[in-house]
Length: 152
Image (cartoon, rainbow, N blue to C red; front, side, top):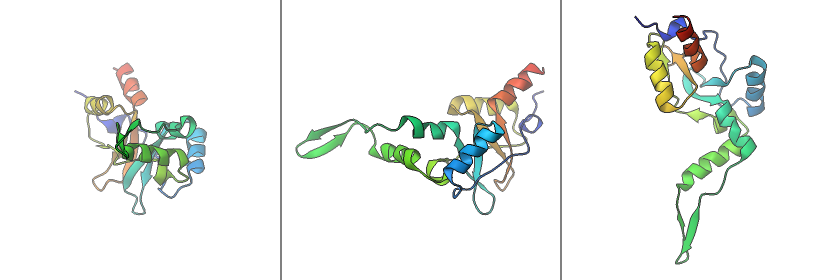
């Protein structure tokens, strides 16, 4: 029988708020040697995650979407809203401006194979574990699932 996420998650989860300065979050990631932090609102409910992937935009920048001029107008070949969202990740000064909102999360009783499938399908490296009110109670990373495989 498969084990649940609760058996392998990191329970002592550190969180930040959308108002946290981005450099403070970066320092927490470095000091704790972790790749992501759940972002919570004033009520302590999960609203997003800030990860090393979100911060990569700051280093490599963002390219303008390809476009063509036609009859005095501009036709974009990619959604310009995506460019604007990515630009905010480059110049953002707070976690809220850089984080990934609408984060996928799981409950503590979620089975490991289900969590692994979510991570694979969504191409993410970690999942916040939340209670019924969406308060973070832990985090499960790909490395935790690999450790569980090794323990079999």
